[in-house]
Length: 64
Image (cartoon, rainbow, N blue to C red):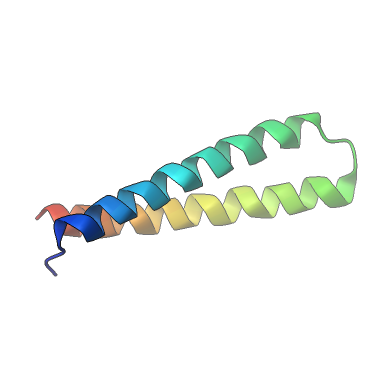
């Protein structure tokens, strides 16, 4: 599928934001002692990683 330049740039922006979220969740996970909050952060790490993989796929297809 062909994407317009602005669409590709928007996906880049989303990927950058998700990368910051992932970094923050991983960092905070190391500092948290509450098991429930630790589990929430672990789920966020998992979901953010999956979402970044999906965004990578979209960006790869956009550049072809």
